[in-house]
Image (cartoon, rainbow, N blue to C red; front, side, top):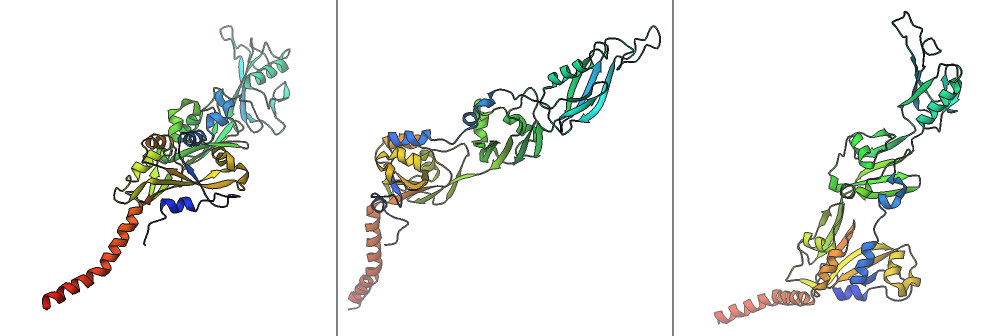
Length: 366
Protein backbone atom coordinates (compact mmCIF):
# COMPACT_ATOMS: atom_id res chain seq x y z
CA UNK A 1 0.00 0.00 0.00
CA UNK A 2 1.13 3.62 -0.52
CA UNK A 3 2.82 5.00 2.59
CA UNK A 4 4.57 8.16 3.80
CA UNK A 5 7.15 6.06 5.65
CA UNK A 6 7.71 2.92 7.70
CA UNK A 7 5.39 1.84 10.49
CA UNK A 8 6.59 1.77 14.08
CA UNK A 9 7.00 -2.00 13.99
CA UNK A 10 9.08 -1.81 10.79
CA UNK A 11 11.44 0.74 12.34
CA UNK A 12 11.97 -1.43 15.41
CA UNK A 13 12.36 -4.67 13.44
CA UNK A 14 15.07 -3.18 11.19
CA UNK A 15 17.22 -2.07 14.13
CA UNK A 16 20.84 -3.21 14.24
CA UNK A 17 20.36 -5.21 17.43
CA UNK A 18 22.95 -7.98 17.18
CA UNK A 19 26.74 -8.01 16.83
CA UNK A 20 28.67 -4.95 15.69
CA UNK A 21 26.40 -1.94 15.25
CA UNK A 22 26.29 -1.42 11.46
CA UNK A 23 22.97 0.44 11.21
CA UNK A 24 20.83 2.43 13.59
CA UNK A 25 19.85 1.63 17.16
CA UNK A 26 16.46 2.33 18.75
CA UNK A 27 16.48 3.99 22.18
CA UNK A 28 13.29 4.47 24.19
CA UNK A 29 13.10 7.88 25.83
CA UNK A 30 12.67 7.50 29.58
CA UNK A 31 13.84 9.51 32.60
CA UNK A 32 17.39 8.11 32.44
CA UNK A 33 17.84 8.68 28.69
CA UNK A 34 16.36 12.18 28.84
CA UNK A 35 18.76 13.10 31.67
CA UNK A 36 21.80 11.71 29.80
CA UNK A 37 20.99 13.60 26.59
CA UNK A 38 20.12 16.85 28.41
CA UNK A 39 23.44 17.02 30.25
CA UNK A 40 25.53 16.48 27.11
CA UNK A 41 25.62 20.11 26.01
CA UNK A 42 28.13 21.70 23.63
CA UNK A 43 31.11 23.46 25.25
CA UNK A 44 30.24 26.96 26.44
CA UNK A 45 32.47 30.03 26.66
CA UNK A 46 32.33 29.91 30.46
CA UNK A 47 33.15 26.21 30.54
CA UNK A 48 35.92 26.35 27.93
CA UNK A 49 37.62 29.59 29.00
CA UNK A 50 37.36 29.69 32.78
CA UNK A 51 40.56 31.74 33.00
CA UNK A 52 38.71 34.57 31.23
CA UNK A 53 36.82 35.64 34.32
CA UNK A 54 39.51 38.27 34.99
CA UNK A 55 40.78 41.11 32.77
CA UNK A 56 43.84 40.27 30.64
CA UNK A 57 47.32 41.48 31.49
CA UNK A 58 48.00 43.99 28.68
CA UNK A 59 51.69 44.38 27.79
CA UNK A 60 53.60 46.37 25.18
CA UNK A 61 54.70 44.40 22.12
CA UNK A 62 56.72 44.84 18.93
CA UNK A 63 54.76 46.86 16.40
CA UNK A 64 52.86 48.88 19.00
CA UNK A 65 53.16 52.68 18.77
CA UNK A 66 53.89 54.58 21.98
CA UNK A 67 54.45 58.14 23.10
CA UNK A 68 56.63 59.06 26.08
CA UNK A 69 56.12 62.20 28.15
CA UNK A 70 58.87 63.15 30.62
CA UNK A 71 58.61 65.58 33.55
CA UNK A 72 61.43 67.22 35.49
CA UNK A 73 61.24 68.80 38.94
CA UNK A 74 62.92 72.05 37.86
CA UNK A 75 63.51 74.14 34.76
CA UNK A 76 66.72 74.13 32.79
CA UNK A 77 67.13 70.37 32.71
CA UNK A 78 67.44 67.91 29.83
CA UNK A 79 63.71 67.98 29.04
CA UNK A 80 62.76 71.41 30.45
CA UNK A 81 63.40 74.94 29.30
CA UNK A 82 65.06 77.65 31.38
CA UNK A 83 63.10 80.51 32.88
CA UNK A 84 62.92 83.54 30.65
CA UNK A 85 62.34 85.91 33.57
CA UNK A 86 61.62 85.77 37.27
CA UNK A 87 57.86 85.38 36.72
CA UNK A 88 58.06 82.49 34.24
CA UNK A 89 58.88 79.06 35.66
CA UNK A 90 59.71 77.67 32.23
CA UNK A 91 58.56 74.39 30.75
CA UNK A 92 59.20 71.28 32.76
CA UNK A 93 57.85 68.64 30.36
CA UNK A 94 58.77 67.18 26.98
CA UNK A 95 56.85 64.72 24.80
CA UNK A 96 58.86 62.36 22.64
CA UNK A 97 57.06 61.94 19.26
CA UNK A 98 55.13 58.74 18.65
CA UNK A 99 57.40 55.84 17.72
CA UNK A 100 56.87 52.21 16.91
CA UNK A 101 58.39 49.51 19.07
CA UNK A 102 61.03 47.83 16.92
CA UNK A 103 61.28 44.13 16.12
CA UNK A 104 63.81 43.71 18.92
CA UNK A 105 61.33 45.34 21.31
CA UNK A 106 63.13 48.68 21.86
CA UNK A 107 62.36 52.40 21.61
CA UNK A 108 64.68 55.39 21.58
CA UNK A 109 64.64 57.73 24.60
CA UNK A 110 67.01 60.73 24.43
CA UNK A 111 69.90 60.53 26.90
CA UNK A 112 68.83 57.01 27.89
CA UNK A 113 69.49 55.27 24.59
CA UNK A 114 67.50 52.34 23.25
CA UNK A 115 65.42 50.72 25.95
CA UNK A 116 63.74 47.33 25.62
CA UNK A 117 60.11 47.73 26.66
CA UNK A 118 58.47 44.83 24.77
CA UNK A 119 56.80 42.49 27.23
CA UNK A 120 56.48 45.19 29.88
CA UNK A 121 53.34 46.80 31.23
CA UNK A 122 53.14 50.59 30.63
CA UNK A 123 53.90 51.24 34.33
CA UNK A 124 56.96 48.98 34.16
CA UNK A 125 58.20 50.80 31.03
CA UNK A 126 57.79 54.12 32.87
CA UNK A 127 59.93 52.87 35.76
CA UNK A 128 62.61 51.67 33.31
CA UNK A 129 62.79 55.10 31.65
CA UNK A 130 62.97 56.93 34.98
CA UNK A 131 65.78 54.64 36.21
CA UNK A 132 67.72 55.23 32.96
CA UNK A 133 67.45 59.02 33.32
CA UNK A 134 68.15 59.23 37.04
CA UNK A 135 71.28 61.31 37.61
CA UNK A 136 70.94 62.94 34.18
CA UNK A 137 67.58 64.69 34.41
CA UNK A 138 66.18 66.65 37.36
CA UNK A 139 64.11 64.12 39.35
CA UNK A 140 62.50 62.72 36.19
CA UNK A 141 59.05 61.20 35.94
CA UNK A 142 57.63 59.50 32.82
CA UNK A 143 54.29 58.47 31.34
CA UNK A 144 54.13 55.87 28.57
CA UNK A 145 50.96 55.79 26.45
CA UNK A 146 50.13 53.07 23.90
CA UNK A 147 48.70 55.07 21.01
CA UNK A 148 48.35 52.24 18.49
CA UNK A 149 47.83 48.81 20.01
CA UNK A 150 48.64 46.13 17.46
CA UNK A 151 49.62 43.25 19.70
CA UNK A 152 46.81 43.41 22.23
CA UNK A 153 43.96 43.06 19.75
CA UNK A 154 41.05 40.73 19.08
CA UNK A 155 40.01 39.85 15.53
CA UNK A 156 36.26 40.34 15.04
CA UNK A 157 34.69 38.94 11.89
CA UNK A 158 31.52 37.41 10.50
CA UNK A 159 28.01 38.86 10.85
CA UNK A 160 29.07 42.16 12.41
CA UNK A 161 28.66 45.60 10.89
CA UNK A 162 32.39 46.28 10.68
CA UNK A 163 35.01 43.56 10.92
CA UNK A 164 38.01 44.87 12.77
CA UNK A 165 41.04 44.39 14.97
CA UNK A 166 39.63 45.55 18.30
CA UNK A 167 42.25 46.72 20.83
CA UNK A 168 42.03 45.21 24.31
CA UNK A 169 42.08 47.87 27.00
CA UNK A 170 43.84 47.56 30.35
CA UNK A 171 40.51 47.47 32.20
CA UNK A 172 39.50 44.43 30.16
CA UNK A 173 36.90 43.97 27.41
CA UNK A 174 34.24 41.29 27.31
CA UNK A 175 32.75 39.54 24.30
CA UNK A 176 29.74 41.86 24.09
CA UNK A 177 32.01 44.91 24.38
CA UNK A 178 34.00 43.78 21.35
CA UNK A 179 30.86 43.02 19.31
CA UNK A 180 29.51 46.48 20.15
CA UNK A 181 32.83 48.07 19.10
CA UNK A 182 32.47 46.30 15.73
CA UNK A 183 29.07 47.95 15.17
CA UNK A 184 26.83 45.19 16.48
CA UNK A 185 25.12 42.34 14.60
CA UNK A 186 23.98 42.32 10.98
CA UNK A 187 21.70 39.31 11.48
CA UNK A 188 18.76 38.59 13.80
CA UNK A 189 20.05 37.67 17.26
CA UNK A 190 18.00 34.43 17.46
CA UNK A 191 19.84 33.06 14.39
CA UNK A 192 23.35 33.98 15.53
CA UNK A 193 26.10 31.99 17.23
CA UNK A 194 29.20 33.60 18.73
CA UNK A 195 32.38 31.54 18.30
CA UNK A 196 35.46 32.34 20.38
CA UNK A 197 38.73 30.78 19.24
CA UNK A 198 41.83 30.92 21.41
CA UNK A 199 44.79 28.90 20.23
CA UNK A 200 43.50 25.38 19.59
CA UNK A 201 40.39 25.84 21.73
CA UNK A 202 37.07 26.94 20.33
CA UNK A 203 33.52 27.18 21.66
CA UNK A 204 30.17 28.32 20.25
CA UNK A 205 27.31 29.86 22.16
CA UNK A 206 23.97 31.26 20.92
CA UNK A 207 23.90 35.05 21.06
CA UNK A 208 20.69 35.02 23.11
CA UNK A 209 22.36 32.81 25.74
CA UNK A 210 25.22 35.31 25.85
CA UNK A 211 22.67 38.00 26.73
CA UNK A 212 20.80 35.88 29.25
CA UNK A 213 23.75 34.38 31.16
CA UNK A 214 26.31 36.92 32.38
CA UNK A 215 28.87 34.14 32.98
CA UNK A 216 29.10 33.53 29.22
CA UNK A 217 30.19 37.13 28.62
CA UNK A 218 33.84 36.33 29.36
CA UNK A 219 36.85 38.61 28.99
CA UNK A 220 38.66 38.40 25.66
CA UNK A 221 42.42 37.96 25.45
CA UNK A 222 44.95 39.38 22.98
CA UNK A 223 45.11 37.14 19.92
CA UNK A 224 41.53 35.84 20.27
CA UNK A 225 39.38 35.43 17.16
CA UNK A 226 35.71 36.27 17.66
CA UNK A 227 33.47 35.08 14.82
CA UNK A 228 29.77 35.90 14.65
CA UNK A 229 28.05 33.20 12.60
CA UNK A 230 24.52 33.29 11.22
CA UNK A 231 23.40 29.68 11.42
CA UNK A 232 19.61 29.14 11.47
CA UNK A 233 18.66 25.96 13.34
CA UNK A 234 16.16 23.66 11.63
CA UNK A 235 14.56 20.25 11.97
CA UNK A 236 12.53 18.22 9.48
CA UNK A 237 9.04 16.86 10.25
CA UNK A 238 7.65 13.82 8.39
CA UNK A 239 4.73 11.42 8.75
CA UNK A 240 1.59 11.90 10.78
CA UNK A 241 2.18 15.50 11.84
CA UNK A 242 0.21 18.59 10.94
CA UNK A 243 3.15 19.98 8.93
CA UNK A 244 5.58 17.97 6.81
CA UNK A 245 8.34 20.50 6.17
CA UNK A 246 11.62 22.04 7.24
CA UNK A 247 10.92 23.98 10.46
CA UNK A 248 13.17 26.63 11.96
CA UNK A 249 13.79 27.18 15.66
CA UNK A 250 15.79 29.65 17.72
CA UNK A 251 19.53 29.19 18.12
CA UNK A 252 18.98 29.16 21.88
CA UNK A 253 17.30 25.77 21.50
CA UNK A 254 14.01 23.90 21.45
CA UNK A 255 12.67 20.84 23.23
CA UNK A 256 10.98 17.81 21.67
CA UNK A 257 7.68 18.95 23.15
CA UNK A 258 7.99 22.33 21.42
CA UNK A 259 9.05 20.67 18.16
CA UNK A 260 5.92 18.51 18.13
CA UNK A 261 3.78 21.58 18.70
CA UNK A 262 5.65 23.56 16.00
CA UNK A 263 5.04 20.67 13.58
CA UNK A 264 1.27 20.92 14.14
CA UNK A 265 0.95 18.07 16.62
CA UNK A 266 -0.16 14.54 15.76
CA UNK A 267 -2.94 13.98 13.24
CA UNK A 268 -5.74 12.28 15.12
CA UNK A 269 -7.00 10.22 12.15
CA UNK A 270 -3.64 8.71 11.10
CA UNK A 271 -0.82 9.15 13.67
CA UNK A 272 0.44 6.32 15.88
CA UNK A 273 0.95 7.99 19.27
CA UNK A 274 3.24 5.11 20.33
CA UNK A 275 5.45 5.67 17.29
CA UNK A 276 6.96 9.15 17.66
CA UNK A 277 10.59 8.96 16.51
CA UNK A 278 13.52 11.40 16.56
CA UNK A 279 16.47 10.54 14.31
CA UNK A 280 20.00 11.95 14.69
CA UNK A 281 23.66 10.98 14.78
CA UNK A 282 25.13 10.74 18.29
CA UNK A 283 28.79 10.45 19.37
CA UNK A 284 29.93 6.97 20.31
CA UNK A 285 30.62 8.02 23.91
CA UNK A 286 27.01 9.11 24.40
CA UNK A 287 25.63 5.90 22.87
CA UNK A 288 27.92 3.87 25.14
CA UNK A 289 26.53 5.75 28.15
CA UNK A 290 22.94 5.13 27.07
CA UNK A 291 23.53 1.49 26.07
CA UNK A 292 26.38 0.24 28.27
CA UNK A 293 25.62 -3.39 27.38
CA UNK A 294 26.49 -2.61 23.72
CA UNK A 295 29.58 -0.52 24.39
CA UNK A 296 31.95 -3.07 22.83
CA UNK A 297 29.81 -3.29 19.67
CA UNK A 298 30.32 0.37 18.67
CA UNK A 299 32.80 0.58 15.79
CA UNK A 300 32.31 4.17 14.55
CA UNK A 301 32.74 7.64 16.03
CA UNK A 302 29.09 8.50 15.40
CA UNK A 303 26.10 6.19 15.56
CA UNK A 304 22.67 6.78 13.96
CA UNK A 305 20.17 6.74 16.81
CA UNK A 306 16.37 6.53 16.59
CA UNK A 307 14.78 7.83 19.79
CA UNK A 308 11.26 6.50 20.40
CA UNK A 309 8.62 8.33 22.45
CA UNK A 310 5.34 6.73 23.53
CA UNK A 311 2.77 9.49 23.88
CA UNK A 312 0.18 7.02 25.14
CA UNK A 313 1.98 7.45 28.45
CA UNK A 314 1.23 10.88 29.94
CA UNK A 315 4.65 10.94 31.63
CA UNK A 316 6.22 11.07 28.17
CA UNK A 317 5.03 14.65 27.75
CA UNK A 318 7.19 15.70 30.72
CA UNK A 319 10.17 13.84 29.28
CA UNK A 320 9.60 15.49 25.90
CA UNK A 321 9.81 18.88 27.63
CA UNK A 322 13.26 17.96 29.02
CA UNK A 323 14.58 16.43 25.77
CA UNK A 324 16.59 18.99 23.69
CA UNK A 325 16.31 19.23 19.91
CA UNK A 326 19.39 19.79 17.76
CA UNK A 327 20.06 21.26 14.38
CA UNK A 328 19.17 18.94 11.45
CA UNK A 329 17.14 16.52 13.58
CA UNK A 330 14.45 14.43 11.84
CA UNK A 331 11.08 14.12 13.56
CA UNK A 332 8.97 11.26 12.24
CA UNK A 333 5.53 10.14 13.40
CA UNK A 334 4.50 6.72 12.09
CA UNK A 335 1.03 5.96 10.78
CA UNK A 336 -1.27 3.91 13.00
CA UNK A 337 -1.76 0.26 11.88
CA UNK A 338 -5.46 0.87 11.24
CA UNK A 339 -4.51 3.48 8.64
CA UNK A 340 -3.20 0.70 6.38
CA UNK A 341 -6.52 -1.14 6.71
CA UNK A 342 -8.39 2.02 5.83
CA UNK A 343 -6.19 2.47 2.75
CA UNK A 344 -6.88 -1.12 1.71
CA UNK A 345 -10.64 -0.73 2.10
CA UNK A 346 -10.46 2.53 0.16
CA UNK A 347 -8.66 0.80 -2.72
CA UNK A 348 -11.17 -2.07 -2.71
CA UNK A 349 -14.00 0.45 -2.71
CA UNK A 350 -12.43 2.27 -5.67
CA UNK A 351 -12.20 -1.00 -7.64
CA UNK A 352 -15.67 -2.37 -6.79
CA UNK A 353 -17.62 0.88 -7.05
CA UNK A 354 -17.86 0.82 -10.89
CA UNK A 355 -18.92 -2.83 -10.82
CA UNK A 356 -21.65 -2.17 -8.26
CA UNK A 357 -22.83 0.90 -10.14
CA UNK A 358 -22.96 -1.10 -13.39
CA UNK A 359 -24.90 -3.89 -11.72
CA UNK A 360 -27.35 -1.37 -10.33
CA UNK A 361 -27.86 0.22 -13.75
CA UNK A 362 -28.29 -3.20 -15.37
CA UNK A 363 -30.95 -4.13 -12.81
CA UNK A 364 -32.89 -0.92 -13.47
CA UNK A 365 -32.81 -1.48 -17.24
CA UNK A 366 -34.17 -5.01 -16.89
